[in-house]
Image (cartoon, rainbow over all chains, first blue to last red; front, top):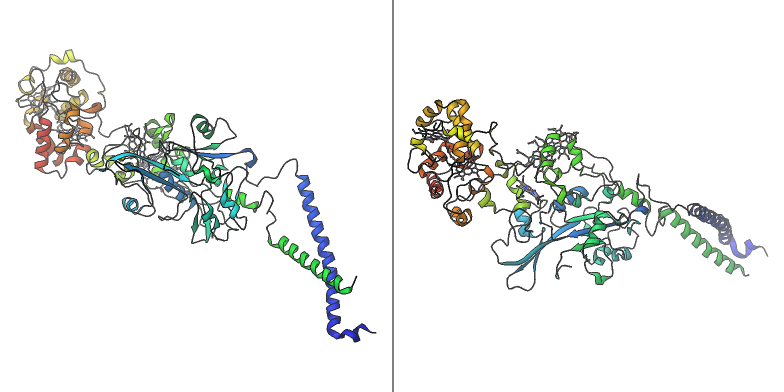
Length: 281
Length: 345
């Protein structure tokens, strides 16, 4: 029996469509296979020298960055906070900070510290503007048992929880040890903001992406220091390459009993602290 | 195999291929190049232009400010404490604002299309680091602002680029004087200033132990008419130019022993409103670091008149003018009384 008669015009059209599809499938499969082979080839060719990102004059496989904070030296001048905002164009308001400084004050007879940061309304009033920062001298007449300042920033963890939860691969850890965000891939879901145990990430409402400290990746890859380290007048912030045993950070870690914040979370931070207290986390 | 099964398989394969090619097309080629992320993002993030330029950049054009700064207390590289130019003046570079996060490798740079600010409110600037505050490590030099500076700007007395250097500080005289030679030239001075340079009720002020450079300048000022007093102007006219340094050296070598301790006086000084003065004149009228004349051993009238002379401009000195201008007579008397209480033994 004639197929056409049996199935009618519609079936014939479907048949020829499927025929075309068959050809397309074969062709497509070939193309995919070819491209897979091709990329396998490039990968094989690169085995002896693994590819590195095209950053002029910089090879990330040669560096392993780390950061130190000596809280015993910090004078709470907040030059680091302002420099970070300027260098990274962070919104000049009292709600978005890539780095910040906390003040811990134990008053006589009190068991727990009073903690404030530059974003506290009292301190903003003292500075006179949301884009300028200074600690108000609010405890000058109080009976203070103990007080100190603690600079904070992203810990660039070895096992970063924020990277784990990112659904798009927009945040990642570079081979030289810096956790950064690819803002073209960030969809602004803010899982990472929730995941970070240190509150180091915040949402940029204007650009609808998450933002954080990058250790000034654009500076360190050019041989400069992060802006906050560059401006610190007392050397409370230390930065360097752990691959270089003479670097300031290697010396800092070697010569001090350093600790990290919230080690129990298992993130393994790479910001090492000296001179913090039981309540600092 | 039945035809419908073959078709089903073909459909599934077609779907798979469509997914794979869509993924190939949509996902960036550099994804997975180094890991589960877009490999090209790394170089893009690194591309930003740095804003802070560092002090060597400033040095190339502002050599004078740099030289002053690098010799001063704000460039203590040796102890790891450096207050860099851009901390006070702001970053020397900018970045072209671009849409979203297209990382910008271009931008303005000082001086061409970026002006840097000259801070005017140093009371706010310097005290960011120097205001006395719980929590600030003791190694950091700290002041109680009102006590230390009154209502003045820090730059009245401090050069911001080398803050230990005080404006109006007394430089050592060019020719060191000979005290023994000076002794022979002061017979006519004793009637008013005392044979031992201690005035104690005489018309002239105490000169014993006074800062040598200050005495030289004072005598020259009377001779040149820059400072005038009916008695002293006539006397100074009789002094030979060549004798000035010797006379100054002689009076400077005489002793005016303090009767009070600076430390015991601090609270009283604050009460008299003199805590700003103690920065230079000490709490007991003995100048710290030779930055100003001693006030010890002077009478209340002399001190009060001197303050009024500075305020009215008949005696000219930048620092003393700023501190006395607008000062009420009552306050001037109070300050004079405070320092007059410190006499020579």
